[in-house]
Image 1 (tube, rainbow, N blue to C red):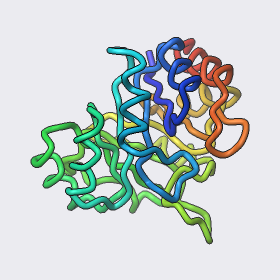
Image 2: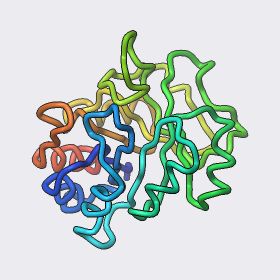
Image 3: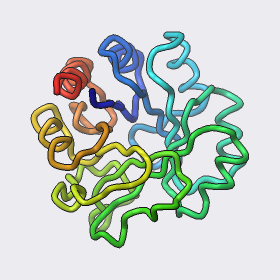
Image 4: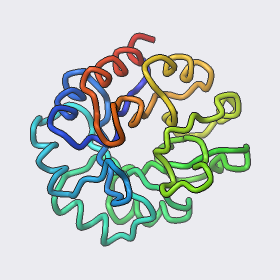
Length: 207
């Protein structure tokens, strides 16, 4: 059965829907430029609504170690999801003792990770469009045919432009182990819809 991650959760109703739907991962965005940004304290309050359930994932963009450490003082995270160069990953894994997923955009096979990259997993989407202010989370659908040739040594999640209607086909075409969605379960940027969250998780888990 495919895995599913709901990213950019920033409200009580959204967090509760993620838990109730049976998602595998809930993502908190610690990048101030994102409409889904939360502070460590806000993520803590959300996470404490339910003990157990989905693994907590923290998304960081080119962070320094102290930035991550500050967040971890407030909220316990199971996984660190990092937008950064591959050579940043080993030090972060060593310092924090947690799995580190690297998120990246793929436009050609040259963007694929090396077979020996030490990241514990990958979140793969399209390259950001020209003029984008964020390196990811731009609701741009990835090139699924290209990603069908992505065979990393570690598990990976498909992201970018996914929604209830297309996620099963995206997983089928690419062979990804799971799906990561944010804007595809929103009614406006940063506003998660509990009904769409439940429908998305059901679509992924029905395959």
